[in-house]
Image 1 (cartoon, rainbow, N blue to C red):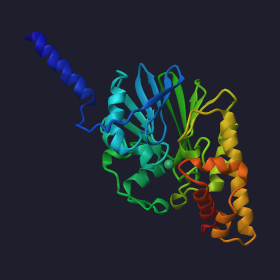
Image 2: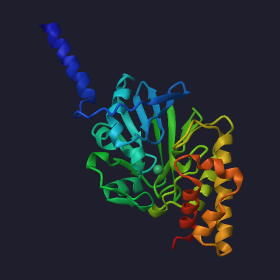
Image 3: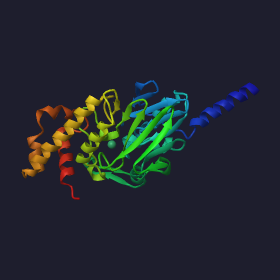
Image 4: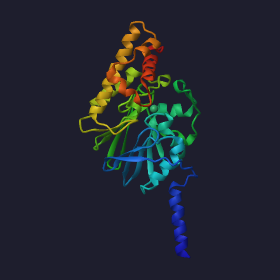
Length: 297
Ligand SMILES: [Zn+2]
C-alpha cells in the first residue's frame, strides 16, 4: 500500500513539474538538429527554437505557435529536465505562441518592446492579420533595453537588442564558449525575409544590424536562423549581400521616379530570384523594401 502511495506521489510530482493544465497536442513533430553537445535547434512549424540542455535544466529561445505548445511540451518532457528560461527573439506569434502556457512555470526574458507589443492588440496589415493582447502568463517577466547576459549550463548567453530591424524589439543571442548565435528573424536562411515595417521594422536597419552581427562572428560560428536550416557565417554573408543589393536596386528605381507597380514589373536581378521560393516571394519582398524606404518619418 505504501508502495502504491509512493507511486501515486511520484506521479503527482512528475505531473506537478509540468502540471499546469491540460493542453491539446497538435501532433506537430519537432525535428531536433544537433548544434553542439548540449545545444540543439528544434524545427517545428514556426521560428527555429534553440534548446540548451544541462544540469540546470532547459532553456529555450522562442517557442513556436500557440497551437503547438502541447506538442512542444511533450517533446521537452522527454528531455527529463525542467524548462527554466525562455528567451523571445521578438513578439511575432510564430516565436512566442507557446508563452501563455509555458509562461505559467517558465521565466520569460525579452526586450522591453516584446512585452509592450504582446500586452496590446497588434496588426500586420500586409498579411491581414490582427493579434489580440496576450494573457499575463505570456508576457516576459524579465525585460531589458539594450542587452542582458544569462549564465546557464556552462554557457554565457549574451542577449543583444538590435533596433529597428525585423521589428522594433529584436534580440540576437550569442553563446560562449559554444560559438553559436541565434539570429531571430534578422535572418531567414536562403530566402527573402519578412520585415515588419508597420511595427518598427526597417530594411536598412536590418542590413545594418546584420553587418554589425557578422563582425562578432567567425568562420566556425554555428548560425541558427529565425527560419531555414542551420547555417554558417558564409551563408549569413550571402544573405547580407542579398539584403544590401536588392534594397539598393529598389532604391535606385524609386529615385528614378518609378512607381511600386513598375518596380514589381521590372523585378530583381536574376541572381536573387531563387530567394523568392520561400515564405516571401519576389513581389512581396519588393513591396516590403518599397514600403520601408518610402515610409514617413
Ligand atoms: Zn518574425
